[in-house]
Every structure is written in C-alpha cells, then in structure tokens.
Length: 507
Ligand SMILES: NC(=O)C1=CN([C@@H]2O[C@H](COP(=O)(O)OP(=O)(O)OC[C@H]3O[C@@H](n4cnc5c(N)ncnc54)[C@H](O)[C@@H]3O)[C@@H](O)[C@H]2O)[C@@H](O)CC1
Ligand SMILES: [K+]
Image (cartoon, rainbow, N blue to C red; front, top):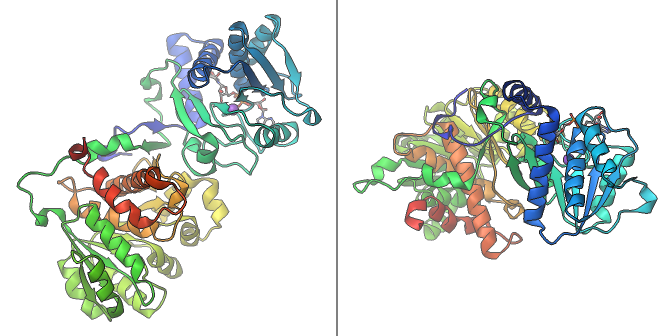
C-alpha cells in the first residue's frame, strides 16, 4: 500500500495490531504488562487532572479485564492524591494477571469498591472514568454492564473520560448496537483505533487523545495500518501558494453536469464549490430553464443549455475533469448525460443520481473516478443494507473501492476515503450541521476542482478525494463556528473553502 503525499498523516491500528505491537515492545524493551498498565493508568490520571483540575469526587467503573486494571491504577493514584474515589465494578471476577494485581493494590492500600446494583443508582461525582471494556470487548453489552452504561447515560451529569475506547464500542469498526458509553474525552493507549474516528464510535468517543505509553513508532513497523487520519493541520502543507506567474490554464477546467428539471440548485452549488476551491475554469451543462438563474448567481461559471448528449460533446472536449450527479435526476436525460460522460476518459467525480444510476446498471468500470456515496447510496452500490455498511465503514468503503475499481468517499460522521492499493483515510473534521441537502453537491465540486488543479503536478483521484473531503469538512466546521450548526447552509461553506484553500495567505 502507498499513500503518496499523504504518507505523513497519522496512522491508526486495529486491536490485533496493537496487541502485536505490545508484544514487540515487551520483548524488545523488557517491559511487562504491569509496566504498561501502570503507564496507562498514570497517563489517564494526568489527563483527568489536566481537564478537570477541580474534580474532588472521582468515579471509576472497572470491568474484569485489563481495561479495568487501568481503571484501578488510576483509582489508586486519585485516592493517594487525596480525592474521594468511588470504584464501581461488575459482578465478574477480575482476570488474573496485571489487572488483578492492580485491583488488589488499590484495595490493599485502603481503596473501596462496590458492585454496581442498578436500583442503587450512581453516586454523585465530578468526573467518571470509564474502564469497563477496551479492545477486549467481544460482544454487545448486556446485563449489569448494559445497565451501568445506561445509568451513566441517563442518571449522570458528570463528564466521562473513557480509557482506550468508550465501553461497548468495537475498536476496529466503531460499531455498537446502541449500548455504549458516550464519553467527553477518550484516551487511546499505544495507538488510535479506527473505531474512534468514524460512525457511531466517533460520536461515542468525543475528543480523542492518544498516549503511546512510551512505545516507539517502530513497534508498528511490520504492521499494516488500518487507516490514516486527515486533520485540518495537514491543509497548509497541501495548499502551497500559487506560482506568481500562474495562469488559468494551469488550474484545469471542471465541467459540472446535472440539474434536470427542478434540480438546478444542486448543480449551482457544485459549480460554485469548484470555483471557490480554485478551478481555473468551470462550466455547467444543465437544462435550458436553469441557465438564466445560474448565470445570474455566478457569471464566472460558463453555463450552457444541453438538451441531448450531442450538445454535451463539445463541452466534454474542452473539459479536464467532470463532476456529474448533482440534480442529474433519474430520467432519460440524466442517463444520456451519464453515458456521454462515462464514454470519455476524463477523470470524473460521480455523486447522487449518477451513483443511483450506476447501482441500477451494475456498471463496474468507472475509470479514473471518485464516487462520493452517503451510506444509503453505498448500500445500493454494494447490494447491502445501510446497517451492513455502517457496521464497519472502513471495510464498506474498501469493498466499494474494490468492486468499482475507483476511489470512494463514504460520507457520514468521519468520512472514509478508500481506493485500491491505498491505506484508507478517515476525515477527522465535520459536524452534524452538515447534514443538510446540498452539502454533497458542494463536496463533488470541491473534489473535482482539486483533481483539476493538481499541486501543481497533479493529484491522483485518491489524493484529491482525501484533500477535498477534509477541506469540505473543515469548511463546515469553520462555518458552524461562525453561527452554529442548526441552519448551516451548503453555500455558507464557500467563503470558508476559499479561506482554507489559501492557508498561507491567511496566516
Ligand atoms: N495488554 C496490555 O499490555 C495493555 C492493555 N491495556 C488495557 O487493556 C485493555 C485490553 O484488555 P483485555 O484484553 O483484558 O480486554 P478488556 O479489558 O477490554 O475486556 C476483556 C474482559 O471483558 C470480558 N468481556 C469482553 N466483552 C464482554 C462483554 N460484552 N460483556 C461482558 N464481558 C465481556 C472478557 O471476557 C474479558 O474478561 C486495553 O483496551 C487497555 O485498556 C493497557 O493496560 C495497556 C497495556
Ligand atoms: K473503556
């Protein structure tokens, strides 16, 4: 696998890889399980002190495994620092080894622990520490564990610090079946896990902090990362200033195709996003009745009426990248436009109705393409249910990339980008204000513009998709900071796209 200029993005690893890395560290450096647990508990205690320095009453829920062991280490550090500590455990016996030694050390030193009884409710504390289950979770929570998680959700106003992963969340996929701790902060040990960054796990984790427990990067040398994480910090490197002698021919020509009768707005959003992301030229091919409105809104976009595919051909000849799908509709007009677009060998971004048409046709050769499905479209493209897609978003994106031999942006909380032969990327940005009609049209235009421009030497579909999905999510976050998530409009992203794509000029 390769990741081109994305190679320096931070990586996340599946549980199995983290366990191998632990073994490598223990055998090479002479650490044992107790050392690692002591480091984990100390790192968690330090983070708690940093985030909630005033907290006097500390609740710790401890499970039967090593995640619980980390909790007992923290409990003892808190107790010996003079805090009131309430340990709640499940009925299960603590597993032999480091976890049991940590529990015994806490109890021997005078710490107290009670078994959770649902009718007793939870004690009032200033902060809870979730040390029920970590990467050893192997099935959905039930019984006392589920009751305890429900109590933390419903009968508790204190913030929650989750150790390694919010209990109930599958570390590899981010899946949970509705019973999982909803943390304010999650401290991941040794490495980030993909389930902290996408889907339900992203929501459950809150802010993610990683502590490597002092393990050097090389313990992961022989391990394939599960994904890399694209964050706003990467944007300045990806958008160097333009050469002073640049001309518009250097920045490509995006042709946006769509806007069947009644859907002109979608195409207008796509085209304006391409302009604001810096494409040299943008054309729009749409139904005749939308032309005046599009021209009035954005005269910089060369908008043409196209009633049949033959009228599209000269526009295709002039374009360097196609964006097709926004408002394309599911009628004959849209199908003819899609056929004409797919007959070229231009790089293309396909979204919305273009994806639904492809799912119906079961076409498998999309060429040099980025597809940007939401989970519903992804499910149709894969012939699966939305639940199957959402159960493991990284794997679903990989299945799509394999099936259609192209780059995939699986939208949603923590958008996932996958392509054959590439390490998938997860976007660590975006907010629920972006769950609005038209946001996807902006993403399509954004990625198309990046594909058209290069850096200037040219981006692959995968690189443009990662950059574009991050830029779009970061623009959504900036717009939300400006006025809130509710009522955020796709067009609110335009000034932010421009600002974020010019990070040097901004500084
Ligand atoms: N192995 C190591 O060297 C280190 C492990 N660390 C911690 O240890 C954790 C992993 O520890 P473990 O492998 O012991 O696993 P966990 O502590 O995550 O959980 C395993 C225990 O829970 C039980 N269990 C799993 N799913 C359950 C469910 N749904 N309902 C009820 N019981 C369930 C298992 O049978 C087992 O007893 C990490 O997440 C991390 O917090 C850290 O201390 C750092 C070092
Ligand atoms: K946990």
